[in-house]
Length: 337
Figure (cartoon, rainbow, N blue to C red):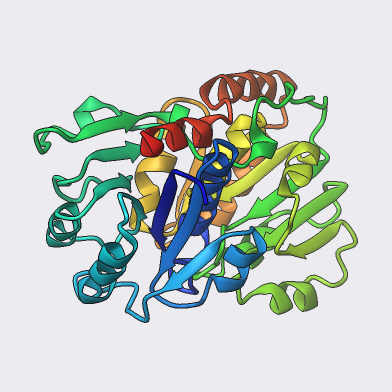
């Protein structure tokens, strides 16, 4: 058994989708390369097969993922029996009390992007493009902050990619909504793009997207349309895409690392900071929030504007300078001390 063991507390299910779990798996992969053993702790067994497939053990607490104070009576005995020294937590359901209680037993590191309250933990990691010292004006003494895109925990495939080849004309469009599509935006975006205008439109439906069958049936006659679910090597579709359209999760950092010109939108409060910052920095135009306004029409309008090769080339190079794909290694170094 490795001398260093990293325990990771996160979840994945149809309500919170896959983002938390996927970025934690990237950290685990980097930690394993550095000689550490990694073990996941989850509320239920929703992610058990994925965790096992990636080669990690999974402790299932049998708790509610959104009641982390309630799980203290289950996780603390695990901490004590296993003599756990360090825990990486990635969840929006954390509370100040939860961190205080865990901190009595071990070092806690938290992946954050909301600044919901001052976190009484050893380390806070926020890899968002808007993360800086001003975002955390109130802090607990002794808590260290690791901020910026340099900590974006991406898979190995995104480390130091080649500069993206920018085509003269847009022929390939990639549409995504993340792990789920709670407002059914993908079919509406497809509908907004004139049939036959582009050679290829690739659509990725995430693990918890219930629109897969509807999209396949509704747009069966569109020969340029290719619909995928659970894509293993998503970077191959990124490489082919002239323009991507994506919701505002961790996917944006993958796209940035590969220099893919991207149009964004949001469908939850935790995505708004992300898409707004990319937009204000002139990196990825934002079509708005799905919960208000005509996002599909704005998406297509931005796709048309990005038909300019020079514009796409400039954005592509700036995106690749922002994200180098080595964030998981840096984050693993932080939590392994």
